[in-house]
Amino acid sequence: MSDRGLSRRILLAGAAGVSLPLAAPRMLRAAEPATVNVVGYFGIFEDNYTKAVLQPFMQTNPDVKVVFKPVRGSAEATAMLRTQKAKPQADAVIMDLSIAAQNAREGLFAPLDPAVVTNLADIPAWGRPANNMGAALTQDVLVQLTAPKKLKKQPASWLDLADPAYAGRAGMPIGDVRGTVLLALLCRMAGVDYKQSVDAGIASLKKIAANVQTYEPQPDIYTAIRSGVIDIGIGWNARGQSNQDQANGEFAAIVPVEGTAPQVNTINLVANAPAGGAAQKFINYALGAEAQKAFAEALFYGPTNSKAVLDPALATRIFGTLEVRAKQMELDWDWFSRNNNTLLQRIRREVIAS
Image (tube, rainbow, N blue to C red; front, top):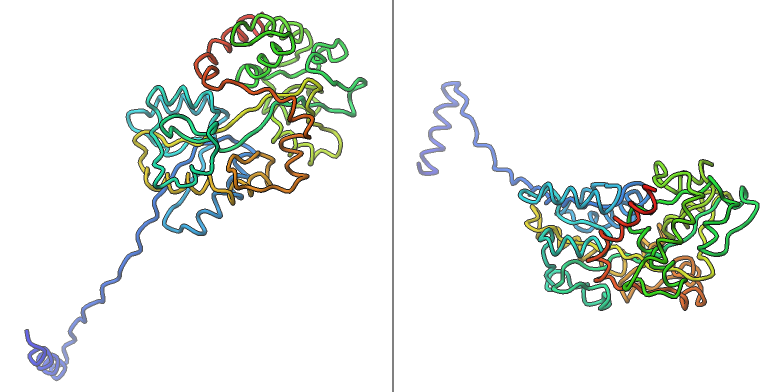
């Protein structure tokens, strides 16, 4: 119908007292943001990572919604990935490097695209697994955790965990990577290469076992010490430092005189991830210097991006003094990823079960 014909129809209808509906304007609906499900550690990790990384990312990337899915550890995340392998519900997973490498070999992860994840260029070689199967996201170290005001004798060595002064007051969550890292340290202290034999380390853990009240402190080792259930144990420095700040001298995280060993968390793209493209966009942001510095300031996790610059005092709390760093034991992560389950079986069978 011509414009003249339409106008004449309107005039005639008006004269007859008839109302004609006007065509509603077409509204353009904004595209729904892509949802990226990120699996990672529960508790204060989830809380601080959401504030320091997820929320800033979503503010600058309104086309992507990131949902954090908490798990208790890498073993739980791995079980979830295996269950969902045919139809994944997660897009990215944060987990321990040794477990991540094993999962990559099982086909649970997909390679990152360097053209999208451009911040890979700023991650050192040790933090970039072969074929870009994930990337190192954070650094941490194993520490002793204590309730200093409750201990008549302050520990100084890893071997002090076996001191009768702490009988029945130790919590030793050694059924995961904390146990295998400690095992490697104990082997070094005995003058043995852990890749050749861990018998010496197992013998040391058996001596410590006499003091252990629990191998599974609830809800975690940090809370158990702060609540007075136990007085000494082992854990990770990042969470230890955070708890130390909140405990008014009732909690301490220390590196024993023999030094410590590192732990690395990686961020990984799930194979056949539902939101793969958006997930890589988020992973790129997470590996950036800005995000890593923000998380270090929030929860004492060491950044892996070579361009992330920390305040010297913060760097010391994360990485230790120069003396502590000089004593740090470097681990063969490829070897660990292939042997971690065997080591854990020995710890569970010969130490925990006995």
